[in-house]
Length: 560
Image (cartoon, rainbow, N blue to C red):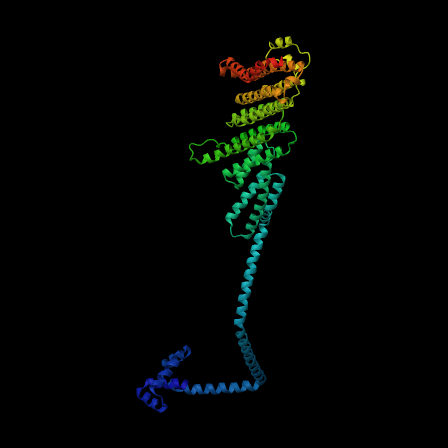
């Protein structure tokens, strides 16, 4: 290399010599350019070239010889070093071979490791994913652990609600229910929240049943207001449904009270029935108006409040219809007018009480009591009538009058009072029995005499008296040639009984009905005095008795 550098310098110093030297060395310009580039690329070469370029020519010519001597000296030093340190060189050589072998082995091992790097990377990725999942789970578990008390309370909400319901703490139970509903709205996708909401809903159904069951008992206004408030907060029913639930529950409570009554005695049953109905229905109306304050305030029929206002009226109408139906069923079973009047008085007081809240129903029950009184009177009159007709049909003229009845007694008895029964009728048992039967009817009617029944009962009494008089007149015709078969005392008894019938029994009975029963109080004002009814009684007596009187006058010779 030094020779080449020297030659290059020499070629540079003399162009002729450079050209000749280039031809001798067989170097072409291109090769010299490449060599020049290689030599100039090292800093050491640059410094050596700088030294050569700065030295004179004769010194430059001696440099190759100096270099050769240095090379020979270095070679000798190396030989001497190798001879003196051959063991170290051998050890270094063996070490080098070992290092090369180890390097080869390491290269093979590295190649094996390199081949397993993708699998390791894949396994590492899987482990990272698994570790990430575990880390996430751990974070969640740590969060759950930190919120353990809150989560525990959330999970125990159904148990809390059941405990509150069991202890009657409905306020707290409804608060928890509302809280659960808010959780459901806020977290609709969480299954655990949905499960809690389902369990709470199940408990809410139990609470709803208990609240309605409380309304079915004998509750007062404050408790009713609280119960309805609870039902409103539960938002199970809308406003009309809530009112219907309240009325239905209260009606069930009243019905349960009715079911405990004994129906063996119609009078006692009706007294207790009306009393229970009056107290509880009035209480229901009062509670309803207090709880649903807007039940009667609406501006027009199209107002939504009008529909809810009709609920109470509909229920009261239902309760009154049940009362009327019960009266229609049980009043006919009462055989005593006093009992009927007692029930009627209680019913009228009931209707007057409801009249204070606009629910007077007395006009609906009046026909029931009128019909009951009419039925009792007709039964009594029909029984008495049939007994007399049967006696008249038997033709037992000997039983018409008691023996030794004088005419003076008949004359004096015709002047007896129309209020008290004529004493003379005691001598004529069939007529007296008929008269007493009619007086029993009058006593039943006297306690409660409906004005609407005056014409009906008057007509029935007149028809009965007409048939009685006709049956009495037909007694002689039941036996042929009665004037030959009856003795004088029997004829006299028949004649006196006939006069007692037409002069005493018939007029007194008609006056007793028209004058003594229907000629008092308000009737006198309606009829403008008692003379109108008295005239009616006199005309009816004259019309009924006229056929028998005519017959007695025509057959006076036969019965004298």
